[in-house]
Image (cartoon, rainbow over the protein chains, first blue to last red):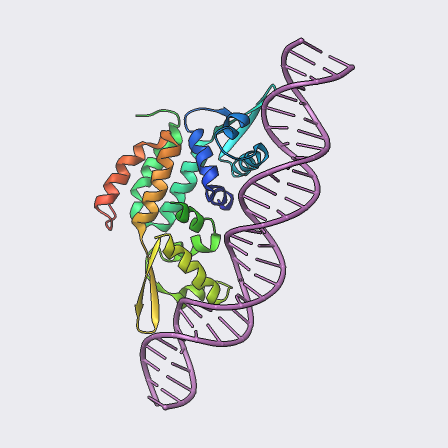
Length: 105
Length: 105
DNA sequence: TCAACGCTTAGCTTATTGCCTAAATGTCAT
DNA sequence: ATGACATTTAGGCAATAAGCTAAGCGTTGA
């Protein structure tokens, strides 16, 4: 949880997550979208991966990154429920999410 | 949004939010719950307030802090929806929250 | 085999954060 | 008025984070 919030505190890292919302991308694909060196982006990706928000898979010379959406939704919803009792109705939706992860209604 | 995520990146500040979940507390009440100096806690409170997550009200010689739950729920839900399309069903709940803020079901 | 490519690791610099103590400000009660 | 209390501001120090360049490692294809 600590690592997740640290990961989310960077605007660059949140943008990376947004880029990965609908597709996987290679490290280079991601880096090309920022005015920043590749090593820096690689470091950001490693922070996101350590936090469990993305996973990487090496295929040939490329390393592809993709989201772990459950991780993000679960952590943030869990926190909101803890801090903000008013939003407990979200708990039911969260539980529903846990079972059917990849389907939109 | 940047300030909200920065505010949430500290475990001390997240704990403060949790303490304020169900009641308002004075700065001193909050500080007494941490093994940390009062000025440090005051600084954390100021970060939370700048982010719009809490508001303060001076009454006599005390300064009381309380949550702004909408701010937290809206920011985090908004972000989850942006990054994690799978959780769009939450959007309806979020909209419902916006209207009836203080009632539990 | 070797050169080019994709990515990560290493090492460095600079900026920011987090904590502290000491001092200032404002409020209450005597 | 004055002393005690609640909180914030100021200033300083150490640890962390974010960026860069250069170098390393594995993979591809000539």
